[in-house]
Length: 328
Image (tube, rainbow, N blue to C red; front, top):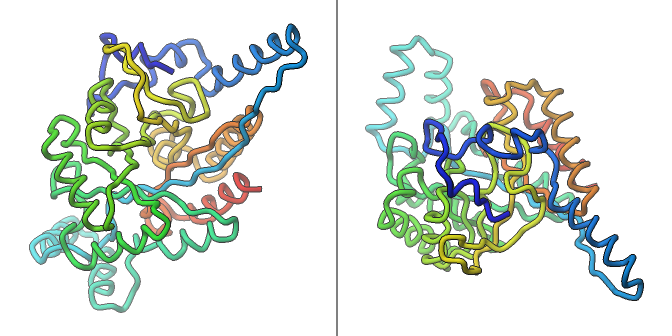
C-alpha cells in the first residue's frame, strides 16, 4: 500500500508511468488478487482466536462508478479553427462518413456521439448511484485536447453534472510536471462548479510518487482515484479499499485518501484487446473478487466509449451489464 517499489528506480513506459510489468504483483502473478484484504482477513481470524470477545467492524462492499471526460463532445464545443482542421483531416484521409456525421451534428440534425450524459444518469438512477465525473479542464495540447473549456456551453455542462458535488478534476498530462498549470486547471474547474474541487484522477493515470500526491494535497484535494494500471486489470496497491496515502520520503501520514481503480474500458478494449464477451467475463470476475473481500469496486469509463460508434460499438450494453452486476 505504501507503493515503495514506485519510489525505486524502474523502467517507465512512454508516458513516464510505472508499468504493471515492473511490479512485484505482476512478477509474482497476484496482480488480480487483493492480497491486503485477504491478509487482513487472516489476521482477523488469529485475533478472534486469541480474543474471542473482541468486536471487529467489517467493511461493506461498495460500488463507485466513475466517468472520465477527456472530450466532452466529439464535434461540438470546438473553435472554428479546430472544427475546420478536423474536417480537413477527415477529407484528406478519405473518412467521408465522419465528415457527414460532423456536419449533421453541427447542423443540429444528429446528436453528438460523445453526448451520453443523460444515458449515464439514467443507467445509474435505477440503483440510486451518483457517478463521479472527472473533467479534463486543460488548454488544448498534444495529449490534452478537450473542447474549449472557457465556452458557456462547456461551463453549463460541467455545472449541470455537479448536482451532487460529484465532479472532480482530471489533471492534464502536462500538469504533472508543472504546478502552475495544475493550479490554473484547479481554479478554472472550481469556478465553473462554484466550489473548491476535492476529488481528482490523473489523465492517463499518470502518478509520480510522491510528487503527484504532494501537489494534490497542496491544492486541497482529499480523494484521488488514480491508483490503477492503464495496461492491466488488477490491484496496483494490492488492495480493493480506500486508504490514506503515506509519504515514505517524509515518513508521515497525509490527509489524501487513495481509491484504487481495478479496471478501465480502455484497458479491456485497447490494451488487452478483449472483445465484448471476454470483457464482460473479466468484469464479472473482478466484481466477484472484490465482493468476496467486502471491498470498494471503482470502475473507470469514458463518456465517449458509450457512444455506440467506431470501436466502441456494443459497449453501452456491456456497461449496463456491468452496472447491474456491480449493483445487485
